Structures are given as C-alpha cells and as structure tokens.
Image (cartoon, rainbow, N blue to C red; front, side):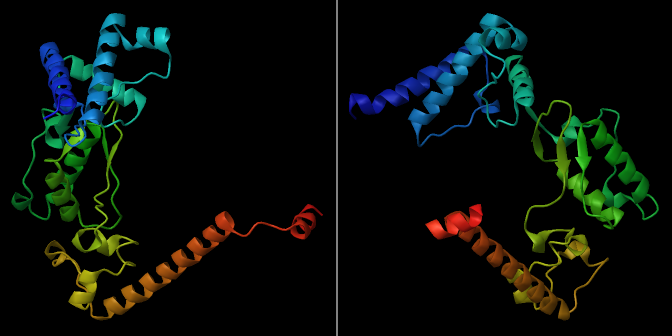
Amino acid sequence: MAKEDIAPYQRNLALKQEFKFLGLDLAEVMEFSPFDLDLENRRLENLLDFVHRYRQHGSREAMEVIEGAFLFPPIFPGIEPDNDWYRFELWLQGQPTRMTLAEQLPKTFVLKKPEELGEGEIGAALEELEEALYKAGYSISLNEGIPDRLVYEYLVESLGEVFELDLGGGWHLDGCSGYCPGCFQRPWCDTGESSCWTEDEEAGKMSLIEALNPYVSASPRSLEILQRLQAEKDAQMEKFMAEHRDSEFGEPEGDDERKARMN
C-alpha cells in the first residue's frame, strides 16, 4: 500500500487515540464514516479542536463572548444549538447523551404490564404513564378516539427506544412510522383511512394489524373506498406538481406579455 493511501488510516487512529486519552467516548456524539476516512477525519479534527477551545475558555458563555454568539458544537446528531450544547457538556462530563425512554422516567414510577390490567384499570394506568412521560419532558400526540389499551401498549413498547437527551423536553411521541398497514392508529387517522397500499390490494380490504381485531374490522368495500381516495390524492398531487413546474420553469415572457403585465 502506498504511503499516501495509509496516511488517512494513521491519522484516524491518532485522532481517536486523542479522544481516548481525554476520556471521551466518541460513540456518544460522533457520526462515523469508515468508507470515507477523509470526511471522518475532518469531523474528528473539528470536534477535537472544539473540545480544546472549550476547555481553554472554560464555559459556553465565555466561548461565545470571545469567539462569537453563533458558535455551537459539531456533534451528531445536530438538533439545535441549545440542545447540542447541552449534550456536548454532558459528554465532556462523562455522562450519557442518550437514554432509553424507560431510563428517563421518574425513579418513583412503577410500570404496570398491559396484560395484568383489567379494563377498569387501564385508564388510570394510562394517565399515570402519560404523567410520568410528561415529567420526563415528552409529549404524546396521537390521533383521537384510540382505545386506551392500544395507547397504553404503544407507550409501554416505546419505553425501550433510545432518545437523544433534550434540554427542557421537546420530543413528541406520535406513533407514526409512515407505514399505514402496520400502524395501530390507522382506523383513527385521516391519512391511514385515505391511503391505499399494496397490502390492502392483496388483502382485498383495508389491511389492519392483529392488535386491532378486538376493536375494528375492515369490510371488502373498504378497498374500493381506499382506491378512490388514493386516486383523488394522486390527481391533486399531479395537478400541484404540474402547476409548480409551470410557475418555476415556465416559458419566459415576451415583450408584449411583459408590457401587458406592467399595464
């Protein structure tokens, strides 16, 4: 291997050793690109430089006064300046920058398993879980009308997900993955009720997950409705795109047209 070919690898190892010497876990704040070491090395160099400058100045406030108010750490993912600073300083202190949702709940909260709750208990358990999530800085933005048990099961399942720590809250749990046939909200969602998927075509009706069986069922006519609504949406989108193309890439106006518009 030529000397110039091995140089990026050597530089990469040297940079990572610098962070290791500083006691900083790169995995908490770094987006690695092993197939583009030049890019990864630039990211490492920028981050290392930022760490040294921060430690030299001693605080965010001092750094912003000396170097500029619009300064923010080059960490990943970049969310917004205040939150990036929050996670950067946690990282420098050796604290995690992300946790599961369960790890962020109040220590006093006791989770009840869905299968252990009767119908008369699920509502109160849901209120307790929603309150615990609210205290942890999370809001719940689901569609209206969904049975409490389905909402509770979704929230319990979400507790295992990992979230970037956020300064003062800001994460919203909306339960939407963009995949309607696999969504528990579909019968209560405008998009879910008007989008036709391959799974619907194959099933001959609206495709619903098994968890919805106790609450709703789809009739064969539902496929016809989905197809009609999907066709209407597609036509509206096609019209919008056509109008957008005409306005952005339309033919240049001639002299007569320009004069007419001016008059």
